Amino acid sequence: MKSEVTVQQIEAAIDNGEMVLHYQPQSSLSSGEISGLEALVRWQSETLGQVDTSYFINILEHSDIRLIAKFHRWLTITAFKQILTWQQLGISLPVYLNFSARYLQEPECVNLIEELIQTYQISPAWFGIEVTESFAISDMSGIQFVLNHLHCIGVTIALDDFCTSYSCLEYLTELPSHAIKIDKKFIQDLTSEHSERKHSINIILESIVDLAFKLGKKVIAEGVETLPQLEAVTFLGCDAYQGYLLCHAVPVDLITQMILSERNRRSPPTPQSNNTKFLAIAA
Image (cartoon, rainbow, N blue to C red; front, top):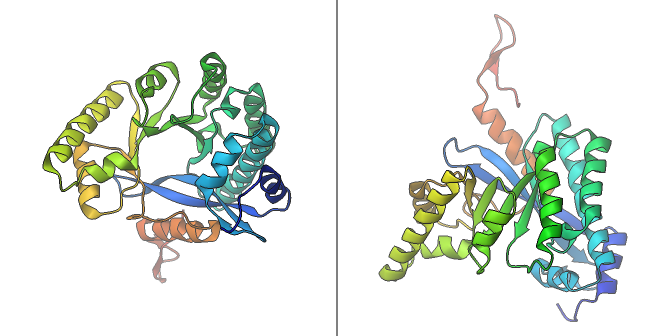
């Protein structure tokens, strides 16, 4: 990237349709099936080329709330349209979006999601929000109001990048959530060459998983990149995992093919007639 990104360029990218959503699957560690999808923004700029997501999201986070709200409206509408398209193909999986803590403190957030649920006639269970704890929450009561309302109507809530800041236990107790996502830094340390660090991380994560289960929350391991890491999170008792070992975030057509191919492999043969071969039907 040759030049610094401005908020004006970010807004123009939203208006001009330069941003798209790619999807990274999550896989159940008990069944091996795809259990959910995380939607991740990709920006291919006509003038800047491929813009690093974390870079422009950080700029967006520090912009005015008007632009943050505009970005989240585009993000949520795009996701709902895709959820509807998938459900018309017989695909029903929860799709998680990363929401800014600043936007989650805005009552407009609730209004937008409720409006889209009614417009697209989609069950709230197929829509999820990931709350990243690394962003400071200046108005805890405001975000509690929004998340409690979304929780009550059935929207799935996950605490992302869990245990990467001092406030993780406060978030766990103060904010409604269905799942926690263990940050990839911890997952990588599960197979560290430093035996003492590896041992310490294992003890910490065992405690986190046990705590989550006692609170009735699912645990998702992020950033699983190797088979030893997959074995480690399976041994810990995590519910699901995501990461490069399973699949990178890919465009919508590729993730759709992946889901349908998995359904074909797992679907039992269905007889077409007494004299025909069995044919696997995608769910």
